[in-house]
Length: 171
Image (cartoon, rainbow, N blue to C red; front, side):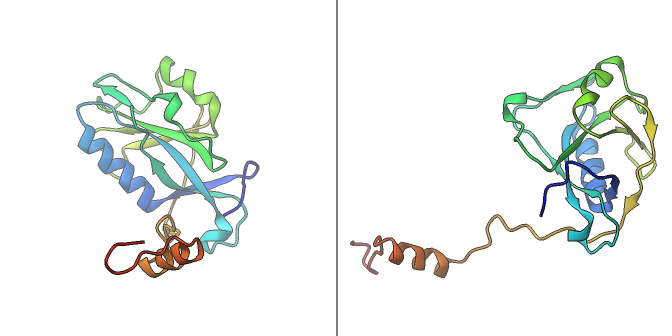
């Protein structure tokens, strides 16, 4: 994984965009909002240098209604892989509102998904609110490693720390 604060955004992974489209459909008629994280292209087997948007973060405490979505900024992770945001417009309009433009300055790319949330019902914008091209890339997403351990690993760790329990549950 590596830091990528510099470098070009090469595109969005097809699976990440499909997740966002489904989430927007599920939230309809309310807006949907998520944050985008990326992965170094080299970690995805691409020869290009840059970043591929691979994840949509759902932020706890996000409030939505048919005309707006607000993220609880206290719940946003301090993340070096943060690359942008996305949200839906249930009315289908793919242009950013003045309120949208006010949030665009933080990251490099912002996506608006419009109803009915089909394959062509979205548009990407840069931090100034200018429409930008964002290719959809068919790349394998990295394996999630959050729970990359087994019960045997836990038992071994407990033994090493002297916290081993016998089969009867006594210490």
